[in-house]
Image 1 (cartoon, rainbow, N blue to C red):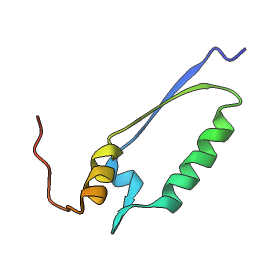
Image 2 (image 1 turned 60 degrees about the horizontal axis):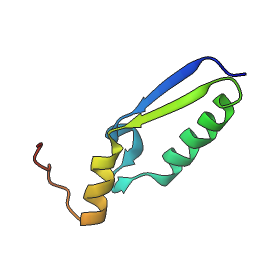
Image 3 (image 1 turned 90 degrees about the horizontal axis):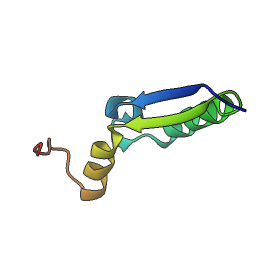
Length: 66
């Protein structure tokens, strides 16, 4: 039974390239996380949702914090 918990945090700059989200980077991190699942219970945290939202909305400007 996996008893160790590993928390991995990805920031927006880690998940993005010049034009929003970088699918190649995301795929690479997902493959690495998949390997870690054999030994750890994983919790993935990301602020990349902000970058994803900008890409969907077509906005490159900084969004206001609430």
